[in-house]
Image (cartoon, one colour):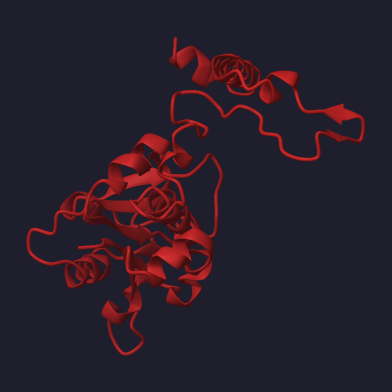
Length: 229
């Protein structure tokens, strides 16, 4: 059975978007994963399929109704569906490469794309949603974050990347940012490829790459470097 992503959104026309191109798009066409995009508004209330209402206690904006979102989730899942349920939210815990690897080893994921001021708090607990964020900034909705999460997972599925080792030395895989890369020409605008990379000494190359990864991590993400010590 292929890895299954179900996405609940008010804007299904945004999908597959980037997920339909490059690695993820090719994998989708080959059946290595499946994408099921559901319109939350199909479960809206009344003649106008209303999905939101004013926040209890007052305040600006609108809030996605618990009954509407719960109905959309229930319709998109089967009994005992084992897939994790994520709610893309700026207040969620940061999504990491470790999360992507863990999700990629499972049966798939259900992702709810938040909109407006947020969703009714009651449905988060009632339907077991885990709030996840892709960064400390605010977007118009959860659709782009949902694409980020799906892409991060799909590229790790067996058979998606050309070489199975392609992801092993990437940034965050070993608690470090990735080392620098070079290719032809050997010299470009007065800058040469480091001699060690052309030496053929694989041990020396590995040591150089490790040292460079540590240097870059220490300079750019000291939080990661400290966490790895």
